[in-house]
Length: 230
Image 1 (cartoon, one colour):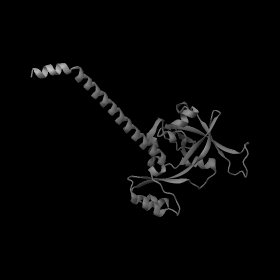
Image 2 (cartoon, rainbow, N blue to C red):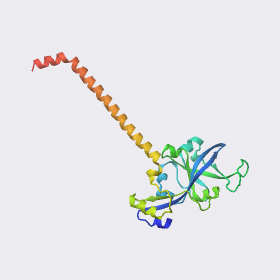
Image 3 (cartoon, rainbow, N blue to C red):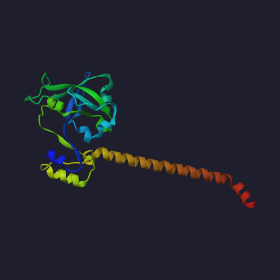
Image 4 (spheres, one colour):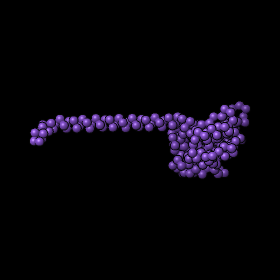
């Protein structure tokens, strides 16, 4: 199926993604974050590496590495430039019952290589890690959460061609549908900015009109004299 999708015109990359929640532990501080395990071609179809403001996206190495959101960096106080490591913990799926004790979690040490800044909702919970390291952590050897498809130019025809290759009841979303809440927030921000600008312009116009009117009233006698003089 992936080979057939790659063969579609204007498709440049198909990336396997395994996404789930895990516990991030950094120097005793713990919280739930969202990890995204990705193939080595991830940055070909997703330009997150162009949104890095610290470090780099060179994460596809033998040692587990990651790029993290700015919100994750701030919340945990992770200094990427200081050669630090954090621990990622995931429930051990081989246990028949869960009990908070040794062996309940599987964990790996991860070195953060860069920090991205896109949008608050994304930055505060996501870290991106190579898929092979995530498979070792989670025990999911073949399963994936999604296929992310990068295209050179979007069109309805591409979406229809991809949809024809997918199994029944598979959910197919473009970028706007996938991040609907983010795009709605951006649209609302644009509208608010427009209305605020119009309001400022309206108030400035009223001030200007009032200033000119007061000036005319104060100079009314002078204007009569000038009119009489021709």
